[in-house]
Image: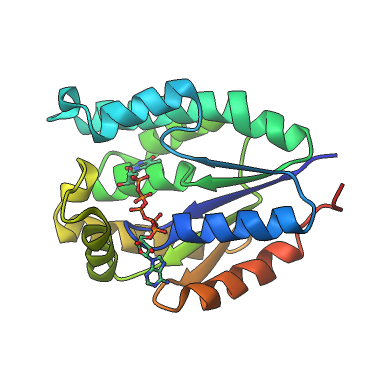
Length: 212
Ligand code: T5A
């Protein structure tokens, strides 16, 4: 029996990781098998690509096109080696970022031709599309304050972009969600962790496969 694939999207510091952790705990407590993963990353190859994209100094000055191909290379491996096998095994996959991150960060904020981004993205994911995408919407100024407070001011390569970049990201996400309301749930990220958790649980509960 096929499982369930839920992706989480949103700008920096919107609270995705926090919500994925608590949703994972609730699902496991209800008897479900859960795979929690992230992008870029999720496989040994993906984690090596993540390091190139975020931390390694060889990544400094990388072209937007190289960046696009690295994010989607990580995704191609992730979809085939981890996500699709877990869905096929009846598990619930919770993924911190997936294809919409590329559409929005590379297609909208980096302004790479969206048709090319879409073609490359579709090639990377094959048939592995989320059943539900939870967009946690938050003013990027608030999100970046949270990120800075967490890291003591130390920012990775992407986090060093200007606020206008993250405003474009936010607008891109809201447009993507409006274009595909069947797949997206938009949640206001400027609420308590518990309030966000309750909204997410309500949407996830009705999709759950029978626990086994
Ligand atoms: N990227 C990624 C692309 O450009 N293209 C792609 O295709 C992909 C896949 C990845 C970067 O790569 C880019 C996007 C990103 O720039 P990352 O290191 O994985 O970056 O980081 P993010 O995904 O941005 O995640 P963050 O860790 O920055 O933020 P989260 O996970 O959204 O937030 P979280 O839960 O860690 O919370 C941040 C802080 O806020 C607090 C938490 O305790 C934490 O301290 N918090 C709240 N505070 C108040 N109220 C709430 N409701 C709160 N919820 C959490």
